[in-house]
Image (cartoon, rainbow, N blue to C red):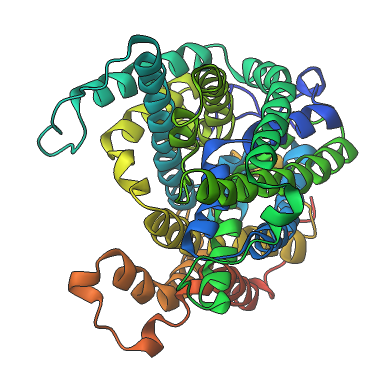
Length: 481
């Protein structure tokens, strides 16, 4: 591996990691996942399933199953990061081409920008709620034209946006330290929330066995889109996990750390979120799926502690889960001009421009439009990457050629048409369903047979893309160098 210098395909941030950079042990990965799992959006997903009509047991089972499924592509794609020390934006060149890799890189980056914006909005509303608790001031004024939020909400969003950039400037090592430091605190606050729910609603058993809400839809109507949303929730990380595993000391460290850090904490959070949401129906007379709103309904001391924890949680999770990946992706678009830090700034700017508060106005929109919708795009990319690395190339890559515009991964002018065709074919079956649910006034009248695959978007896309890509590439001699 002799990749050095800066070129149209390389800079210091994209180059393979060396032995001195491979400092992440299994407990660092476990802490990283705890930091990302114990987060507000993950809580909102779990609580949102209750709000949509699942029983606590159904919601917990759906979330646990979804995380066990998504762990598989995490480990398979993460293997390449550890073996070759390369980030996602470089790894994806082997399948899409040295130029074509920009397509999946941008797709994954734009989704991450949406997530970064959502987390920043949550952090901003947390800061505003904290100011409200301390000052007693609640008159936020009317919504601003076009934006749809008040001026105090906009200012709080901007302040939190700036706070996160201060951490971003410290680089990847600060991400590792921040996640390691905050993980124990997050676990403690989860148990505190569980204790509150049990204290106010008759114990854990009664909460977990609570029935669904009156007039709830059939379980099957919620289960499949809920499961797809759960897989889709981590679909971005399933792609760019090499951005982290490239710093692993060994394959054992990344595999063990991820296997411990993802399913177990997510199951714990699911229990706490669904139990707490079930408790809010008893305590407050309605299901409160937003933890910031829940904290604001607790006694003053609980509000202060809860909001402070949410603030810390949002910073650590947002940088690790939603900034690192797109920063590398944008850097890969023009390595000569864009460094990791500039890529991070681009991510933060786009995240603000998309008005992220509109993505989570309701639990239904959050789960069925946002999560399921983008899983239809990212599932096919995961299918192509896994098929290329494990079935076509048998885990053997030429790292030098990944950085060579005229190497074996140049295909046709830098583009692999097979990967692009597989991507388009895999997206097509679920696109009508997305249009129907995202824009019901324009596309809501589509025939059912056109939209029936949408609840299974990630699975359909990943399977179709894998089949089409393998069929197109199976006769191509895999790189043996």
